Amino acid sequence: MPRTKGDHEARRRDVSEAVWRVLAAQGFGGLTLRAVATELGATTGLLTHYFPAKRDLVAHALDLLDQRTAARPRRAAGTGLAAVRAALLDILPLTAEATASNRIWVSSWDTALADPALSGEYALKYGRSRDRLRDLVAAAQDLGELPPGDPARIAAGAQSFVLGLVVQALFAPEAFPPPRQTELLDDYLAALVRPWPESR
Image (cartoon, rainbow, N blue to C red):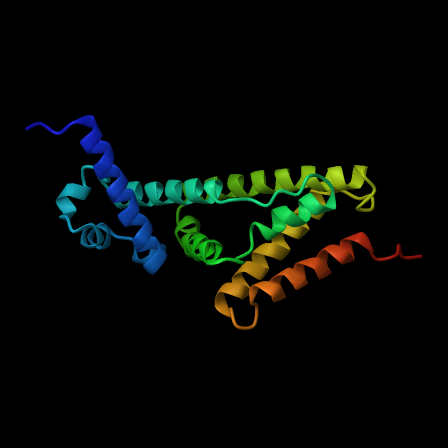
């Protein structure tokens, strides 16, 4: 009996779930056709129909990561400084799901750095994130909740802060539990609200 389009889509979903489970357990360093085949209970030959080369598998894994990150529930916070805070909190590993997603993101950096095309894609991805954050910062400035200044520069600093905090929390979760991460972020935002006085 011939396989239907529905069968093919169901199998592709199964493959995607197996890829995700391998990523969650082993990161990008452990992402191989053999590992996915073992997780799926299939042969590597079957997987080559979906991923003719390792780069195709990596590209699919990155697409999955994008999709799952985009689908993750976000905090609703209106506008102004509260919206800036919510956007930054959404990046941090404050839940089990966010921790798993961040572990996969961080494990993907080495893969991206080794591939010029992927490095370019990542630069654009983080640039778009900064642009969204810049717009939130500008809105908070318009409301008088943040002092004047270049919103792009402030957004770049905030993104750099939270990404650094992500790495610390992943490596030392006992030292950076969710309440501590939130506290550190609030300290950072408070410093933005009360900027250094201009030098005389």
